[in-house]
Amino acid sequence: MTSYVSPQSEFTGIPIAFSDRYKSSPQFLALFDEGMAMVEQTANYLDGPGRIDGRRLKSPLTIAYATESMRLTTRLMQLASWLLVRRAVNRGEISEDQAASSKHRVVLVPIGRSTKTAGYDELPEGLKDLVEASLKLHDRISRLDRMMLNDEREPSKLPIAHTVTAQFDLLKSAFGAPR
Image 1 (cartoon, one colour):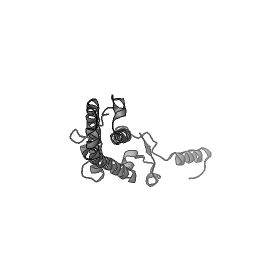
Image 2: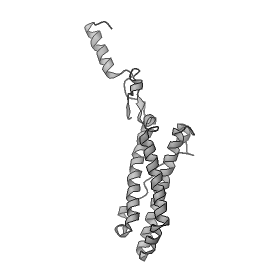
Image 3: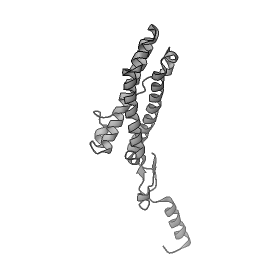
């Protein structure tokens, strides 16, 4: 479990789970904005320059282009769904239990590593850039999802008392110093 003792809980020694802290942080909001911007950027590319790029390809590459664009949009819809569920939890629109239910739980499944597809290197740069950026975003959000799941499943392994304070208390009691 990734946790730390926050300044607010310093005196109680109650650990704060990473997921509790992260979900309302500016970093989450930046990740949310990045994910939604990538969805919009991809839609703009596929409906505009990407459509033109796709028409210019020779027959065998059109299948690779269609495959990669479907993988890309599927991956991004999965990520957008995860981000929207997490934002709904952050805003109090749904509970953590509801987010974890089968109705809302978004299982992040790897949608193929496109760079291994035959003809990938010959696809338009615009598509490849979006694919590679989406894979990086998928990896980041998948790591974050695993960290959040671990926070929910594992009880804290941190001691209840602040460790430095506990050590001072032990030293004081060993040497008979009044408290």
